[in-house]
Image 1 (cartoon, one colour):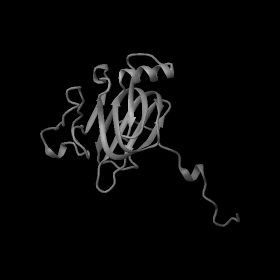
Image 2 (cartoon, one colour):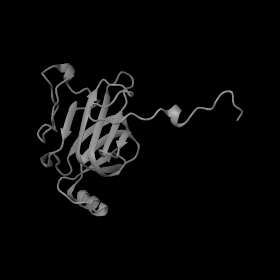
Image 3 (cartoon, helix red, strand yellow):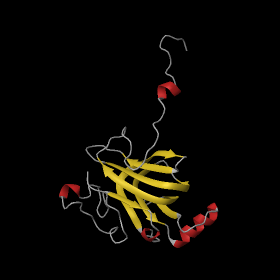
Image 4 (cartoon, helix red, strand yellow):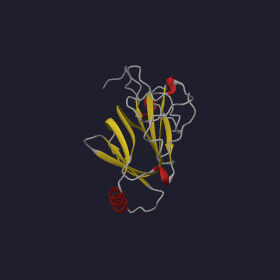
Length: 182
């Protein structure tokens, strides 16, 4: 696994090579995005700047109230890698559950002002991130966002954050007893 690579505004517009090894170049199905990044400083959120783009399908994979973490995931299918995108701490979100392609950009100054005013939030450490596709936009107001591409599977935890394991669906919603009359 390549070392952690943090994105700076200068790095956001170019492809990053880890350790000079071509197999560690971005394997995402697009160019100019790093395999791994974590953005949490005010200077990294430039109004209107696109910070992530992928043509792959993404879904809301997990959300935890206790740490206010939102995880989006592109599932590993057809030999592709898994991509996780994490927002935290999430203060407000307007989010659909599935995306046909994913673009994340910093809200413009006008979008930020409008969304923060409509939600009653304030603070320079709150970043308004526009999330969506070419056709529709949602948003997340959070302190940080990061992503990581790896070879993990759906049933494996994200390397970006801990999410408590879900309950056993058979215990929560027991299957009908085959011997009972319905």
